[in-house]
Amino acid sequence: MATERPRARKLYGDPSHPKDPVSLSLPLRKIRFRHPNYPHATNILLQFSACDANNGIHYQTAHDACAIVANNRWDGYLSTDVEGAERIEPLSPDESLDKDDYYFHVPEGKDYAIIPNFADWPFPHQNLPLHWSRQLQETLINPLSYQTRCCMTRSAFPLENAHIVPANPSDLNWWRINGMSQYVTHAQASNKLRLRLDVHQIFDRKPRFAVVPKYDALVAHFFDVEGAAEAVELYHNVPLQHLDGVKIEFLLARMAWTVFPYLGIFMSAQRRRKVWRLDENGDRVVEELDGEKCIEIYRQAQAKSRSVSPRKRAIGRSIGGEEELQDGYAEQDDGEEDVDDWNTRGRKRRRVSYGTPSSEALDRSGSEVSESIDALVLTSLKT
Image 1 (cartoon, helix red, strand yellow):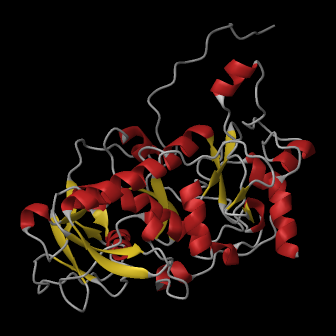
Image 2: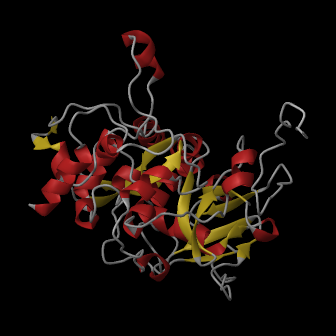
């Protein structure tokens, strides 16, 4: 009888996309987007890695990033000169920008204020640009399909829920100020992506990616390659799947949340800057801040956004006398396993999903909380 000789399996090679591998030629150059109203040495508004075709960066994505920090100025334009005479007018929004430097202008002139951080950014209700305004197809969610596949890799395990608009207390405040609960249509998926654990870490921490409209798809876009070449080779420009029920508004907000930390060069240059801020009455006003104040508010914003995955919360805890669970924010654990809790309490919290979940696991969405928070949110939506 023929038998196969017992043997060890072959070693893995370097990770790569199974059907469309990419190999980066490092180091990738950076493309700078400048503010035309400041001296050349201190006017870098944003700086991104050239990860796209022709050693460049996708035009529409770069334009959107500049427009967001300029207070949603979708009518702004890019040029290769400080006066705005050499205007960039691509034949297609999918073309790549391949110069080293560009200037972002608005029609009123050079002296425009910028938004310094995500907390001060106003969501553009009724003013989404055309390429963002199309709605993702609304379909009835199949909970089993949603729970058992990563929307990036199609892996079945280990999976976590990743909030699109992060669930920090500071971001929860932004959510409420901007009335984002109006876009919640299904508590389970409107503001969540189902991601494999390692992809979730990349999505939330470093290098971070946004999901943007490019090349007639919704794809992952990395703004920086430094220290993350493997992640970029694996996932940059890869379309996401299983996005039924996810709202395009939340994906735009996530792009803004991802972009604002790249203002570090601009906000830390020890220069006076004209910025939009929220005053104590909740009104948006233009302020001119000195260099030290710019550094202070930038550092504060970074400190608040470092931890984007919420830990277990008591049901019904309130902020400002208002129930967290009543505004559609889906306040629950992202499904992370807390190793510190495991070691100190002598038991493992039920957080990471492996394989096909049971019906009980689907109800709990990987959380130890006895009553599904998503179910509570859904109940609040129906009332």
